[in-house]
Amino acid sequence: MASLQGTIDMGNITGMGLNPLHPEKFEQALDTLAHEQLHRWGAEVKFRNPDGTMNSALLGKDGTHWSYLLDTDGSILYGNDWRDNKDGTFTSVSAPKYYSALDLYLMGMIDKSQVPPMTLIENASIDPMKLPELGATISGTFKAIAIDDIIAAEGDRVPATGGSQKSFKTGFIFIAKPGTFAGSEPAGIENLRNAWAGRFASLTGGKGSIAEVAPFLMVQVLVTIRWSNHCKA
Image 1 (cartoon, rainbow, N blue to C red):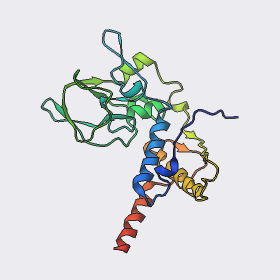
Image 2: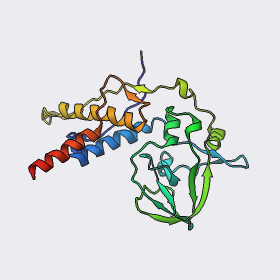
Image 3: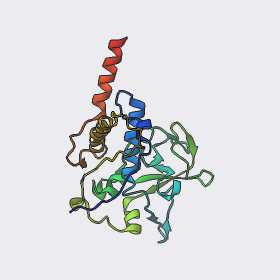
Image 4: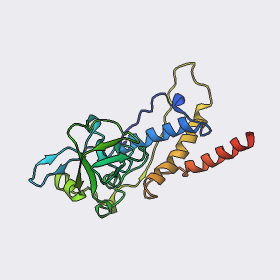
């Protein structure tokens, strides 16, 4: 029998959004699921300095998210997607929306050979706990962090990619106070469940799946919305 590996409290999910025809709120719900699911594996890793000491500079908010100064290619677990302007400054060019290569390695979705060196910007005057900031430009010194630097501190991932779990059963439980159940919530949760299966598959490059749920990619919903709005106009 499989054991429970974790829980995610989505709070007031009805206020967050269960209707894909309201894409902003629906995306918020999917982003929250993607973020909290990723906490099963990260972010808590350190790396080893050349002198053998341990370094926690990859970490940011609460010590469980990526540093504001780390180039995470727009990881949903924070950091930024930093563009090197080649003049000593860096600009954040995308919002947090993805699972980075480091995220995918920690999840067991890809091998360490698929994780390129990461940029860590060194600037003692900037708080690494800050949240991602699309469009921000900062100054600093480029520092390359290799996956082998992380493995030197944390050890190899166990199990390795070839034997890691990639399909996950996810149950959704809706709790309502007496007298507040409207009756429409189960259909909305089913919307979210199906869309989450598609989003998880997309975020993991097709390597991960939500078991026993047919993937439903959000792009299909957005195309329908654009067509409907055009007809109304």
